[in-house]
Image 1 (tube, rainbow, N blue to C red):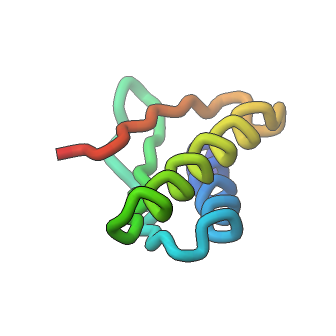
Image 2: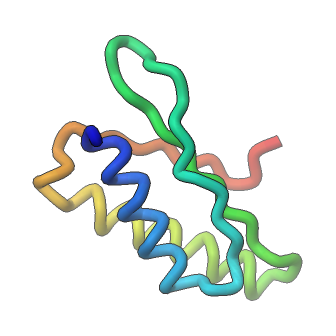
Length: 84
């Protein structure tokens, strides 16, 4: 597995621990773009400001933590809060 898949799995595990009320979908592979593998991870939080805020904080901490992991240096991240 490439750094993108490993990063997606690492982020997912961190979110599962930090926001157990959130539901995770993925990481799911996407088509290659410009020669790079891509994965998508969707986080669904229960309704309510507290649960949503906890999920957003968990995503932020997970992405920051994994982004700092030098072994995943080839991975980049994009976060979309409340996609439509």
